[in-house]
Length: 256
Image (tube, rainbow, N blue to C red):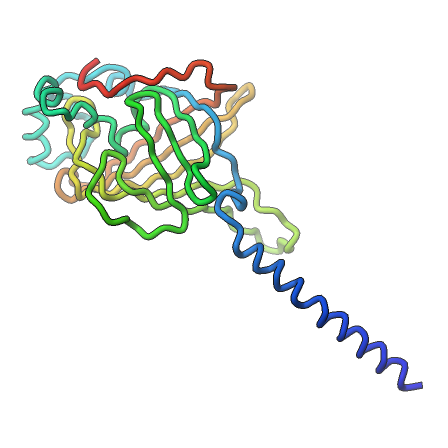
């Protein structure tokens, strides 16, 4: 009478052992899921800038001396006062206001795609710039500074609430992006500078748009020990478009 339960336990153990490699393989597969496959939210598609604030700084070139809202150092103010659009054009620096620290403030459209399973790509029609967000990447790559710098990205998922079981899905999420190794550029088109030592931290999130549709909300924090007395924080919004029929690539311009 005692042999049957023992036999059942042995058989169950053998079955479990037989399944163990399969379970372990599944666990490894989940752990090795690429950033694209494990994305908690989909940012891909076409987006158009939705300018609801700072109109005079974003839709036109503000006059020299209009620096309200930017915590500039004395050195930064001196540089801005010497701003000359013609000189930037002559030096081939007409993209200074299209660098990573300012490009999301430029009115225009974004096209967001996956370059590969670990790299999210953002193309802008204004200035024809390309940003690459590298997931699982070191803080910076070797090489010299560029207009868009080097961006390291990571998914940020909502924390589980207390008592949530393993079957509870974590809906939503955002991307945190840290960008370094940027060429010196302008935070605003009228010469407000940021240096090559600046660091940009951004948070990309989605929000429902009243009446239907989606908004992409980008919160940017620029820190620059040389030209900023404290972090410069702005938020930009983009509306989702159905397709790329209004996509209109234009080259960088030092003036509008």
